[in-house]
Image 1 (cartoon, rainbow over the protein chains, first blue to last red):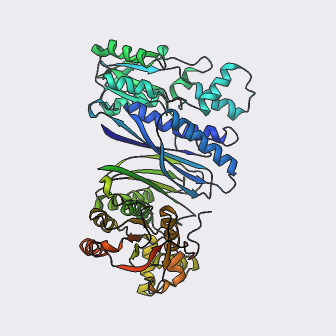
Image 2: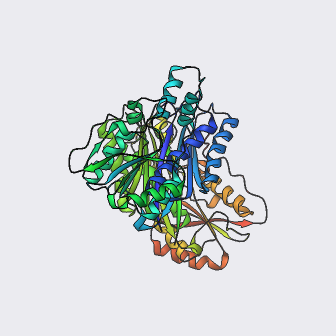
Image 3: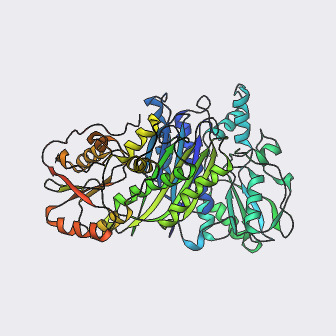
Length: 270
Length: 270
């Protein structure tokens, strides 16, 4: 087994607002986005570190709720909190998590392994988190179940840990990446890292019932997984997805020797 | 070998000011404070992750200088940068580093191993970083060499990596901790973790020529090491210190069955 390690931060005013997400939600999401990175590598979580930079106005009650959000998810994913840091913030709340995972060396999934001819698959239905964020931004009443599930997707994403681990274990995927910055961005990153192009049939992209195609392509924060799968391993791949039993996959295109498709700009960090 | 992992953040306005430290200094220090934690465990650095939260006004030139500061120290300490994250800040600059180190299981130094009768030793001379910070805060001209060395101690601390590793290897110390929050705080933490008290003769504390005893005890940011050493291993300990050849040590007291001494309050995070 080798250790893989990943780090990701949630920054108040950039990734969340305390008016829109509870402290427990923020803790949950801070860990979820890191576990999603481990999932994309096919790694089993081993341990996490939590580094908090706290504004003076954060109450003890909110601090406890934030920690509960992290710990509940840590318990479910069997990744004990082994260390961390607390500092004072002069700005907003800043939640940083480092997650350590283990995976057998030949089973690590990378972005760089896709080859022309490999098929592209994506898990779940896309765009929900973007719809949820848009609804919160617009201040609309969350009356329908569909909208409520979108807000939940923004607040408490579910990383596809089991799917990533099972696919890595049967070695059916040549590349994998999570969709934290959107499907369009993930396809671009995998193609660039692998030195290939892709043909994507956008009419096949699994769009959430409340979302538009553009939200599904570029909305970001979906924390689903994009896989490249060699043609001869497609059956093996479907067996892994079935075994994981977590979420369906949809074929959306294939890697080519041609150009990298421009499907839009993902989440802009700056 | 086991992995140990530590994380520490430098927050603008709390741990540094961009007027007082160059971007290169900030990068250097962000890694140094983490390596100091590894040193206190006796661990050899293996890899680091860098997570930056960047304010929009940070120029590309400063970004490069910050990265250079991290990478120069990473190269010297043979800890390659293996990953990280970049996010946008709505407040100040936030530099978070996670450092991974390796150490043989029976050689890990902890805070909790001190026993009554163990002698207490501290490396280097204390208080310089506090003097440097006070000089920058007061805006005094840095004319003397002594003051310049204090400002350098605040800006570019030197973690005692070699000393920590060599002492851990010959297993002469029962406990160790770095002085990031001051000597008074370190003694308190080691005593609490070990369930013992201590007698400290403050007249023996090695005070930097430009500092007061209070700055040496509570100023913080010295990144020297406090060791507890069983009486029968004192000779072995001194041999390790000599072998490391990094910095002298001074005996300042001993662990007891009595009370934890109150030598003052260390750096207040809140």
